[in-house]
Every structure is written in C-alpha cells, then in structure tokens.
Image: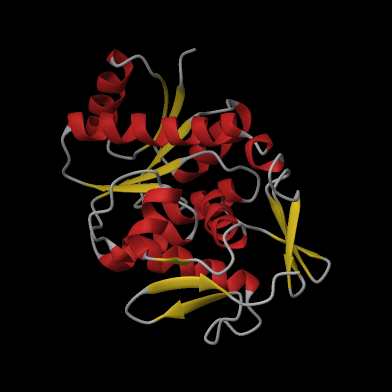
Length: 239
C-alpha cells in the first residue's frame, strides 16, 4: 500500500524538492503552502500516514496546525523547520509531534526519518493490546488513575485524560512495571524504539507534559517519581 503524506511547507522550492524526492521513494504526496490550506487538506483529503509540518507558515502557524490535528488524530507528525533552538524543539514535541528535523537537511536523512516514523506508527497499531492482555489485567489503577491497556486510554477520577500516543506509551511503561526504575535511555529505546544518543530534551518535554496531565501537582509528582541522577519509577501502591 502506498503511504500518503501531507506536506505543509510555504517555500515552494523546498516543497517541490521534498515532494519530488519522496514521490520517487514511493510515497503519495499532498502539498499545501499555508496553515489554512493544511487544515482543509487534513479534513477533506485524509487520512494520511504522516504529516510533514513546517513551523513558520502564513495564516496559521505550524504549532496551531499541530494542536488542531491532535484534537482528533494521532497521525504521526514530523516538524520540518529552520527554527533550531531547544525551545522550538520542546514546543513542537510537547504539543505532540513525533519527530523534528532542522533545515538544512539531506534528502537521504529526511527519507530515512520519514520511513522510521511511519514504521513505528504501523508497528504500534499492529501490535494491538492482545499481546499483553493475555498476561496482564486489561486495566491498571493507581490512586484514582486508570490506564486501559485494550483501548489505549486513561481516566483520572472519572475524567478522561487526553494523552498523545507517546505520552500513553510512557505511562503504560511505568504502570505495567511497578517498582522498576527506568533511565532516560531505557525510556527512549522502549517507547521510541530507536537508539538513544543523549538528547534528554525529548524525554524531559514528554515527561513534563505527561505530568501536567496526570499529576495533582506536577512540581511534586506522585505517579511518576524522579530518582535524581538515575531515572524515573512508578509511585508506590498500585491497586
């Protein structure tokens, strides 16, 4: 099956270069050049297997588009942008992006990253909940927070917690391994399923966003606790 990519890039020369290269790699490309067109294309021409999203766009920013997408979809989103500061990376990843590549980039690297992101998304979907369901309870509860392993959802005190795919898998990792301490490298390799090269920012951003959603006081977390200089572990007393 041919994978479909929504390419959101306001620079027509870059869009043409990226679209042509990925087209030759076997992808079907839908190109748009501003934020409003991106919203329309996502709604009217989907579904897509990946969104390549520039941050600096006319009409609506890339972050606005990312937030709009995440309201209804967990489709993989890779940010492609000339903005290369840690703040911009944290902002993009914190709002639910799956990867980030900075301009200028090589087409070989871009194609490899696109393939990896799509492969991870397909692998996560194909695994389903049944592998662990045979050996674990379908849901796990810790002090009012319940994670449904079958439906990939979380509820706290009766209210749904809206998690991105990565946030859910981080939470699931801890909830299904009570008492185990995970280093940042272990979290990255188990959730992202890639080698860890020391980019702590990715883990820090996702952990902060997850804590903002599940903790009563994110600055004093109880569900996922920090062991300074070592890593993280689930809080005590799963019931």
